[in-house]
Length: 298
Image (cartoon, rainbow, N blue to C red; front, side, top):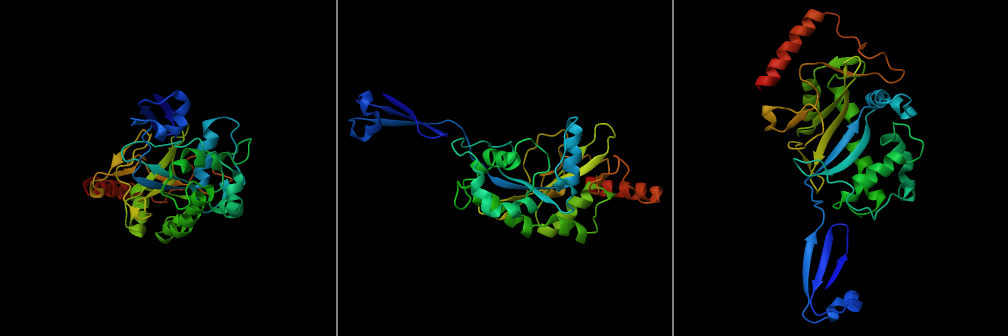
C-alpha cells in the first residue's frame, strides 16, 4: 500500500499489489485502487471585498497596544482596500489554503505604486510587505477562481480594479456623508445599498476608553464570476451581529444600532468623542429615535 499527500487538500491512498519502490509508478501496479481523502475543506461561496477608512484603522491599531504607530497612509482622505477574502457563507474562512504558495514581492512590483495608492499598509510593522504578505497567504491562496491564479499580480490587481470601480469615497460624499461628522449607521448602509443595489456590511471600531464608535470598514460581496451579490450570510468574529428584516435576514453591521458612529477626520486626530454633533441636540435626538424606529420596523 502506498500513501502520499499530493496537495494541501488531498491524501491519495493506493491499495493493491504494488511494491513500495513502485509507488511513484503506481499505474504499472496491478489491481490498484485509489482512495481519496480531502484533508481540508477550502470551498467558498463569495468574495468579500473590504475597504477601510484609514483614520479609523489607525485609531484602532494605536488603541490595541502602547507603542503601535501608523504609516502616512493613515492621513489619506479616501477609502483604501483591506483585502479580498474568499468566504464560505456562515463561516469564517477558508484561510491559508496553500502554504506552498508563499508571497513573492516581485510578483506585484509592476503595480506597487498603484497598491501604495489604493491598498496601502496603515499599521506600521518592522518588516516591509507584512500587510500584503498576510493578505496573500491568508486569503489570496484561496482565491482559486481568479484569472491567472495562483499569481500575486492577479489577486492584487483585482483589488485595484474594484477600488476604482466601487469608490466608497465618492459614494458617501454624494450621499452627503463626510468625515468629521457623526451618523446613524443605517444612513451609511443605505447610501452604499442605493449606490450598488446589493446589501453591504459595515464594521465599526469602539474605543475602550471613550466608548466612542467609529466607522472602520465597509464590505461588499461578489460571486466567483465577479458579479455583485448581497453580503447576507457572511459571519464575523464580533460582539454585535445585527440584522435587518428587509435584507432577508442577512448581516447588516456589527455596529450598535443604539449609538451614532463617528466618521473621523484624518490625522492629527481629534481626541476620541470630540467630533462635533449638530448644534441642536434635541432635534438630533428626535431624528435619531425616528430613524432607529424606522430601521427596526422596516
